[in-house]
Length: 411
Ligand SMILES: [Fe+2]
Ligand SMILES: [Fe+2]
Image (cartoon, rainbow, N blue to C red):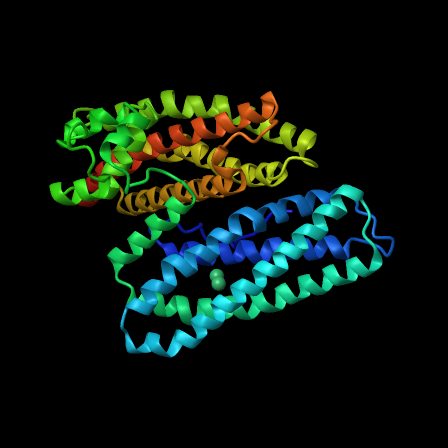
């Protein structure tokens, strides 16, 4: 069963409160899955295979990903709200304290639900009294979350969007991202970043950032000192790490050349890798779904992302790119093309969010103990695919689309 986050694209970490709201949709969805498992069970307490598969994914989420949401609130959001000094925040202090107390209670309930369900999976049967208690605990979780999420979204988050400045919200996003070990940790020293990925040295050289003797400065501080935009530097480093041509100087390349490069390099690679990645995801889910946490859920999540990716690639090649090579002269067609570019960026954001979700489900692609070759290959494939997609997106977002937008709006 897929978790429907609603039809809007998922928020990225530049909108940390949006990310928190998306997490709420996952919490609600996965909790409903656990409740469905108990609903699917008859009075004998026998666990069916579909119920077990549903349960594994949901338990995995509550054990590994949901606690990060609590930390996002308790360590990243609430302290900033409390420190804001805004008089309206003072009125919510009691609400925030209650939210923290509820986090403690939901932690207890999840621990108990987890223990019961895992032992149920081991034995295949649950005694009637235990099943009744499990249902009661899940019902309590549902009640708490319903009220809790309402208070957070209608009061606390709304206020946070108002009183926490734009720069600080970006900082919150970076903290939350680092908590999930996604992307480049901007608080690390330059020397450590180069040791990790030597190709980053070229980017630092180009930008005049010293990574040898003075390399103990963090990336954030180094950017501030040099007046560089941190987000731009991170993008360049990501592309360098991907070993791509994204850091190449495209200024002398024409739009048809850039389009041709994307199609023959990145799209060709994607078309080759995607079916194999789907095959690996489904095989690992089918063979190891009952034992290895996350693989069924990862398969479903990746299938959704793969669909968006395929549609986006087809639309670019069949509809958007031909128009970029020969820009339409008609006003309405030009306006339509600008809208198409926005839709392509949104689709890319959805793909990025899909990979964020995959990172959450699969422990940042760290190979688990006892993983078979297919499982290892699947994780390595996701990692390579993500790096290549980021490199391709960088060429589109930094070079191709801005150039076309400028041509469309200036003539
Ligand atoms: Fe909360
Ligand atoms: Fe929350």
